Length: 294
View 1 (cartoon, one colour):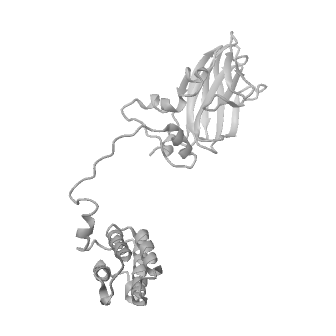
View 2 (spheres, helix red, strand yellow):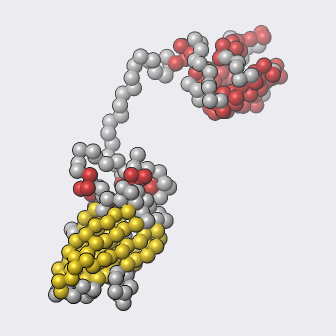
View 3 (tube, one colour):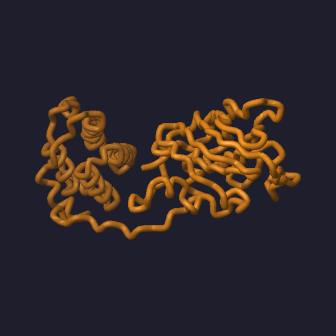
């Protein structure tokens, strides 16, 4: 019936039909399964679950137990449900919903907050690859110390984590500075699959020597890329990151090199004494870490 397609049709008409069916309208006794489906339809409408209501209605229309007259009424109801599903002003709850809503939740009772659950960081990182925000920081902890939660680097090699300083990538970049004295300086940062990272190292003051180099490792300690050893100023340009994860950027003087195994995983550092300089390190091209947060 065309009247069911009107956006202004209220719930009262729909419930009069649904209620009539459940009581065996038109002198027809409904099978128990159909009666259950109609009860589910009432609840779905009261809860505003339009797609579920549409699916239930479609199932009822396909039932051999439903007469042609019932099927015609159901067709009109389904059209109305489709209108409500796309409407910016869904209908107000009907008084008929009072008994239905009570089957689900007491209206004056607030739902109980769920118990906090420990976070599964492996699953969280997998979810990040699908561009879903997942990491939740503890506001009670000083932000710069909590940029990279310890759980994310629990399996990373100590050769990187022992010296790692987390970089704040709130705006998708960071400029930091430091000094090397023959050893390496390590920085950790969180980035997303497909980020194209650039690192620029500028030596601002030389004490002994001054030649610099850059390395990038993944969360497992695998060497992914490094700067050109013949370049006067170390840089890594537009490097595409292979997955959403924690990465380590390492600043070192020429001669201080990572020792890696056949799989490219770091096993040690080869330290070169006698080189010392101040520097600034610029990181760009990463997704702001807040975009990865809920």
